[in-house]
Image (cartoon, rainbow, N blue to C red; front, top):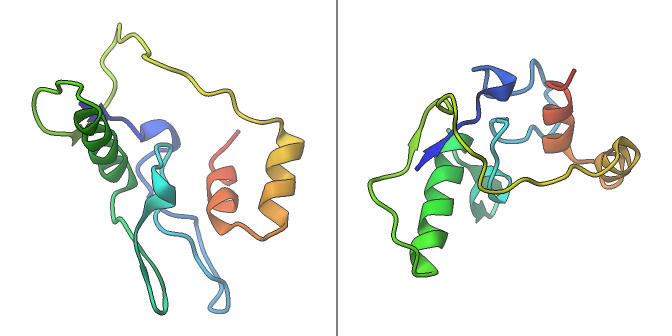
Length: 116
């Protein structure tokens, strides 16, 4: 199983945050559980590589559901000719803006910074 989070390039985070902002964890085109490893008393602890975290999380969920998965989860590029197993339709931009603005959602802001 290979997780491909390369859609936004290799930079894992928004360009810059002010000191009084609460930055999200690293930003990737592939996210699972918002990249949160654990909730700590002073805030969440984020996965350093969201794509690897997502691939490992999907592999664990498949195995727990009784699906046989060969090999370990890894990060890489999608090979040419690969067939999608599933697709998720994004909500309209108006809904994404509403979700981003109230409550303020820095992860969605970070992801939006990578969209054309």
